[in-house]
Image (tube, rainbow, N blue to C red; front, side, top):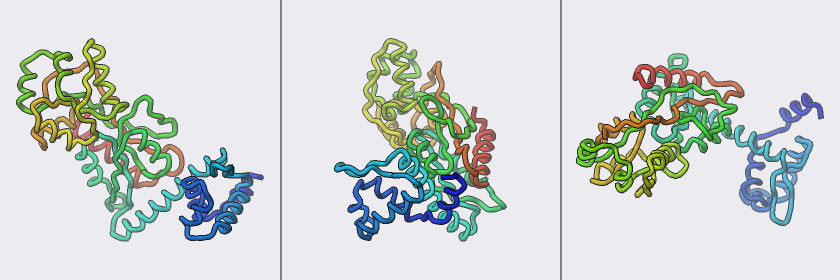
Length: 317
């Protein structure tokens, strides 16, 4: 089928209900269950799938006794279906935002240990045609948010870049670097400040770290291994800055390593202290990431510029 003819056919016949159908088939693997989900009959679902495969000119799902599995074209189509449905949802958010006097609505993915004041300041100063944005924040790990960016579930990601993160089809603007800092309760921090850095002694304390595989945790584990000390087994694994601050402030044995701006934030709001040790490594930088393919909305571009301006004003390195 000629590409232009295919575009005309899809433009004339493809409907949102076809995209919903695709995702429901993938989710349930059974046309009977899809019919129940969509409150219709199985023959109607079968007919709709047949119409869709006729439009695409190929089979989208292989049928077997184990259920329905997407073909190669089906997998590609499912990716576009997710993106298009997310775009429709975002259009609805934009409509509500504009009706309320705002410029647009932006979905922002944010990884752990990104300072809330940076995001807040960027939102406050972002103007599109004299109007401010409304924003939904989606918190998660870098890999999870990169998938959401590619599927159009989020518009922008503020997160840490570095291996093994795949950024091949993503536009990247580095915002700042984050040197690490050791934090502890005030009494423990005062005791540690009077001693030389000793990784063997630190390993015996109650460590609070992120889950395995996260950049900060891997760096901490490597620090112990490089010095010949046994890496600690964390007493708590969490991304939550609030929980880290509360646990450390309420304990005489708890410690953690967090980025410098997060450490300074916890000094202000949680009453922890920074132990004045210096480390010979730094974390991968924090960046704003946007899709490099397709048309970028003005709201996303302006928000990215606001983030860079805020980081420059705060003199983040």
